[in-house]
Structures are given as structure tokens and as C-alpha cells.
Amino acid sequence: MPTFTIQRQRRQAQYFTEDLGSDIGLDMILVPAGSFLMGSPATEPERLDRESPQHPVTVPFFFMGRYPVTQQQWNAVEKLQSQQKLTSNPSHFKGDDRPVESVSWHDAIRFCERLSAHSGREYRLPTEAEWEYACRAGTTTPFHVGETITTDLANYNGTDPNYGAYGRGSKGIYRSETTDVGSFPPNAFGFSDMHGNVWEWCLDHWHENYKNAPTDGSAWLTDNNNAGRVIRGGSWNYDPRYCRSAYRLRSNPDDRYDILGFRVVCVLPRTP
Image (cartoon, rainbow, N blue to C red; front, side, top):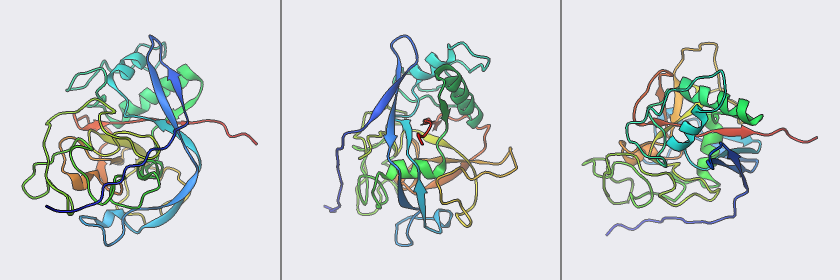
């Protein structure tokens, strides 16, 4: 049997719950300020040049959703009084506690705008740097659980004949659909489903690599509003190499597939 290390850490997370009405809430976890190495080292199995050069990034504190936005939360925000109209639950795999999917980048932005108007707080998509920092939660391994991952710890395709296993790990199962958020252990910051389940939209425009990337955790944007956007985290339909903390992929902002979801960030005013 192959041997590998799976890391499990538990810490107490600080969070607040945004009230969406009808006893529905959105848990927002505090991500402490800090620095990390963004991207993958040359020694990481299955890495791609788009994950380099690895570079230090310093991220201010922010709050991010404990889970990807669920269908119940999407429906609740869709009903809020606002000028911004959302599409009724577009998800292919229905379930209140499953992540909302089949949403475009523009759909996710409209959700954030409506939630901001409702709450009086600034909600937006995470920057690519914020997403990776929150996913890693202090780790430097390919996954926040360690050097490899199993389908007991995340929802991905573990049966691919060539890529169903990662590194020295073993193959697993293929659920062929999304799962309820929080079905797998959270990372050290308290976030669940950072690996697999649905790809998550980020705020950034797509760049082929990290040359000249910002180092302050901000979004890397261009003047082209039609540019591709960054998605992170892998999904139920992809094999484990795509679920790595450093893996990044491009998607068009109008794409709506049952592998595409998102989670939100809240930026609170900083006291002097």
C-alpha cells in the first residue's frame, strides 16, 4: 500500500453571520492578515508554468464565506428588494445545501452587488491571491490536507485511469455530481470545499503566469472587460491535480456550466 501524509488541524474560527432573511444566514470567516508564497514550486507534481513564478504576497485581513454560496442562499438573495435582478436558481444539481452552479462571473458579481445593497457592507468575489491564501491556510503542500488527497476528503473524479490518484495517493470514487457544502473536513482557517465540488470564480482577469503580478493581495485587472477570468479549486468532474491549492484555470465571464460556482468576500472598514 502507498504511504502518504494527510494533515488535519482544527482551530477556532472567528466569524459573523450575514442575515439573508427567513432564518437563512451566510457565515463569513475572518482570514487573518499575513504573507505566503503564491504559486507552486518546481518540485510539485503536475504543476504548470501558469502557476509560476512562485512569489511572496502579503494579504490584509478579510472575511470570506465558509462555503461556496448555496442554492438556498442564492434564492434568499434573489428575493431581496433590489434593482439588481438575479436568475432563479440555475443549478443543474438541485438541493438547498448544495452549491449554486451554472452561474457566470457576471451572475456572481450581481449577487455580490445585491448582497452589498442589502447589508450595507462591501461584498465581492475573492481576489486570486485571497483565494489561494485562504485555501492554503498556512500550508505549503499541494493541498491543505497535505501532499495528496482522497475522495474521503473532497468531491472530485477519483476514477480517471491516468489521473484518478495524485502523487503517492490512491484512487477513489466518482460521485458524478455536487455534494452538500460542508460534507468534508474544513481547513485550518475553517473553510470547506476549497478542493473540488465546484470551481470558484475570482475577481481577477486571466494572465498566463505571475510575471509582474501584484504582491499586496489585490485583484490583477486589465482594461479589457471581456477578458477571461480566473477560476480556482477544481470540481466534482475534474481529477485531483486540478484541485491543488496553486492550480488556476481560465474561463470566459459569460460561461455557465454545472461545474462553476463561487464564494464571497466581505471587506469591513479598517479602524485607524
